[in-house]
Image (cartoon, rainbow, N blue to C red; front, side, top):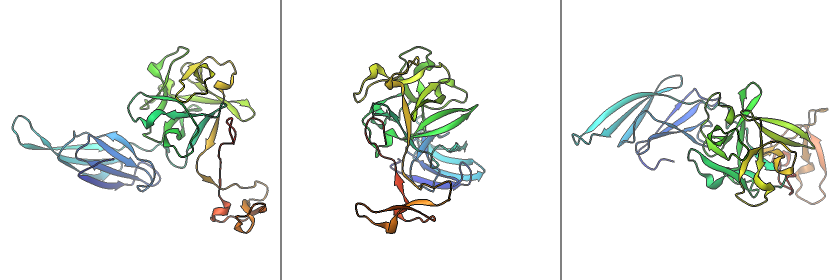
Length: 286
């Protein structure tokens, strides 16, 4: 996040809640949030370089006018620079759509070290439901395919160098419209498990060598049905569970905190005893 000279505006475009746009004179990035400043922030390039200060003026729709003062090394003065920026829409990436991708071995897809850099490595790591490194949004790309975007920076899981070869590393990279090495299909293989198939290569997401080690390589490989190629989607956060036949919701009777308390169905309330969370039971199970 910016450390000096912050300037904040809100625009109605970009998502259901509009977009909070934050500028920092010392950074060549804009910082974006699609939920009134709560939760995850992402970035996009600004048209102006890092400068002493940079202000923003909404001028309609998704466009803002940026005005900044930039040092001129030739004259020793500060020049005023002006440009317009089209703010990137959310594409519903972070709107209540958050999952962990858990392998049959119980470990998860992880943006190693939370590295926000282009091309950062994506490997497996021990299950940690509190780690942003392991949180991904599953977003349609059209034609029935999906991308999975990191909650760290909005970049997506990508086959390195658009490779078609077995063993190609999975990395985190900015999404390019139509790039099939960044698009995936989730194919049911039974018992709640999926193979995750890259659209470009037709190969599947796999833990190299069927390893159970932290930081084991995530790669693409031909499907052969081993556990290292089987995954499930685990929702992150609190959920209300509704019975289809009655429309009522699962509830702990009377809000009791005692062992042996009865679980019932009840008309919807926002109380905590109506909220449920999916947590690991080991071996990739919940």
